[in-house]
Length: 179
Image (tube, rainbow, N blue to C red; front, side, top):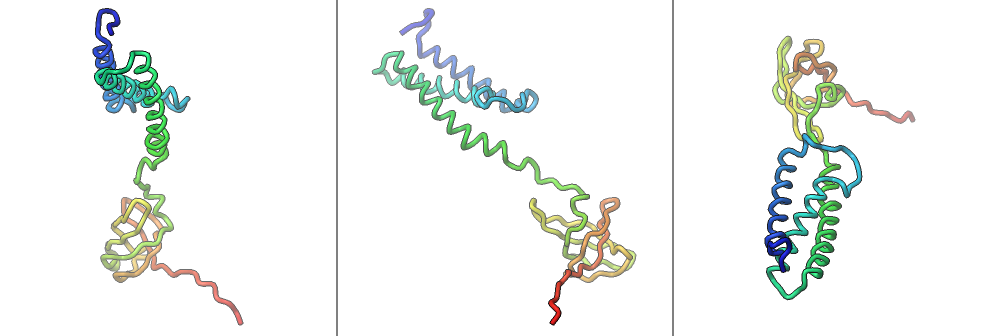
């Protein structure tokens, strides 16, 4: 079948190439053109995925032959909607709600408990390690009152200045029953 003097397979191929090219551009530069929150159906990633899937399925069905063009368009549109729905709910939504960063701020370290891995001398620096949701962090540390702290001691982060953690030995609070 021909449309405007061009074969339908060529139209599907041109549509596929254009949709794939726009998808590639959106992947590379989509953050600059982020439209924010809106209807999920108007999300550029969803629209471009729909058109790419539609043209790809239609091209394959047209090449396979045996079906008329109306059936091919109906099957392609239905399959593209189903696949686009699956893509949106099982890939795009989980990615959207995923944690965007594992970075931490120095202020978020205040009050945390760490372990000394390099002993802290009087008026000197050692190193502590603490576990966060993003992994293990090791930082330079000094005694809050310039006291020495031995290796493998637990310490409480009291203050932070110029990238140095000022720590004290950690004494966990234990509530005891009176008898």
